[in-house]
Length: 238
Image 1 (spheres, one colour):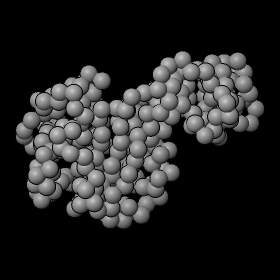
Image 2: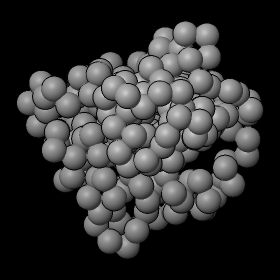
Image 3: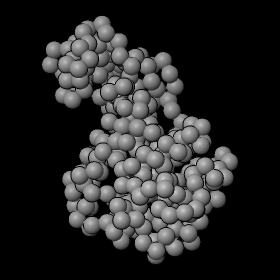
């Protein structure tokens, strides 16, 4: 935990009582005592410091803002819903990079049972995103949406002129650094473990998605997500 992330609804004025997970970390891992000051922030709000008030039972802290609220990150992620076993970890990794939103979509090679997993529920996804923000030391918790139909997700896309659209797929072609971004927002789509099928790639291309290659190797989804977001961060200079 590189940042103590507080929810707006748990603040009573400037005082918050932490849940069991964060209390245990502050008390048992950090070894904080009353009076200690921790790096903290409010979800989608300012950063600052939290003074530890009490460590008995639920830890209580007093938050003092010293920084400003974040602007929306420039990059959005579209991800074919991965196996439940790795879903939480991928969401955590993606959120640590600070993405504006994450859309989890269906694809031909996505097992339909994945959508029934508790790990694809809103609470589990939000929890993973918060962990990522704590790791990445920022307060922008991304909006997460699950789309059980590929075509339903397509209908939610903003006009293509508003952003650069990228779809990652193994093979040969342009890299992330080759694309022309200007000041536009970026959305990058990462496929399932078996990759996108030709029909899906054709649909992306009709929607003005440019195909990019992340590596000369074939990557698992969780590695591809980190590779894409890291390359975009370095290219855009975020």
